[in-house]
Image (tube, rainbow, N blue to C red):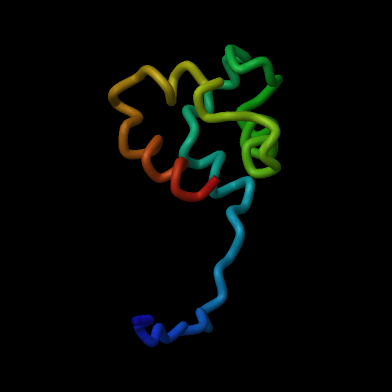
Length: 76
């Protein structure tokens, strides 16, 4: 027996992550350990799906960035 399942449309608009939003959560040290010249360049590539958060050693390994890492994982 099949249950009647009602689908509810999502009517609220989601805004895509902006580079500045992502950059604000990164270390902003421009250390180049991720392979990019700046944290802003890394942020843009994160949004485009061309880079991964695990490629930023600070975000990946520093416990002080735990909250930022969680937020970044949710938006990129």
